[in-house]
Image (cartoon, rainbow, N blue to C red):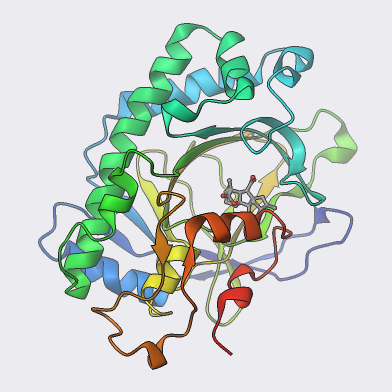
Length: 326
Ligand code: GA4
């Protein structure tokens, strides 16, 4: 990783001076017998790691990327028919309902096919059937990786049964979603600067699994508040701890703050699977990790309560604050 300077200009343009202090991104080989120990360590230290030997066929990743690129290349008027997102559908520049903006266009899909909204159907109306198939195949595979990682987490932490976390994502009512982001290039010469693509935030769900093309942009925030750039790697997945997992581990794992700074000379395409629990799932520190309720740092809440609270917040807000015990 490369440490970048801290100043972010208010007009959404950035001047970035790399200081090139290398920080190792933890890399976990999922076939390594030590993987579970390394995952726990990475979740404690960074809330973030890269996964190799994950078993997802590279052609599934590139196929979805190509289909997404094809969708984003459609005329704006066609894409707009699938938007604005509420929260699913096509979005451009606006992120969420509370005034956040970025140099980005995106598609947000609910992973549960039973919950397709009119906006999601509009996405697939504009594109050939193979886009829908690419999404479905990719989601099936990335969900397996998500569950495998979550089972390594439970094993590494000594939580029983080992599907305590993965069953929340495997549940047919799981509120997981897939986001496909396009950080476009700029046409105007004056626009050819680094811009905030996706402002700093933490992910509300349990765990997020990101794959991008080979264009840089993702940065994570370290415990000391410094930002580090994550070198892109189109054949690996990047995993980050979400707010719900921070709560269930009573703060032992940190939901990592991250952002995307878009270099407008190269387009970046990413797809992120957010592993979320069913809406009715109760989220609280896991009793096997923290038996005494007095030691809980968070109140118990349902995923549905957390999600509605998140949608009332701005991207950069500290959303867990409302759920902390005094
Ligand atoms: C951040 C993580 C996911 O991309 C997301 C985002 C969601 C949205 O874009 O609709 C939110 C954001 C994310 C957190 C706060 C709220 C909701 C935008 C926003 C301002 C899909 C999610 O689940 O939460």
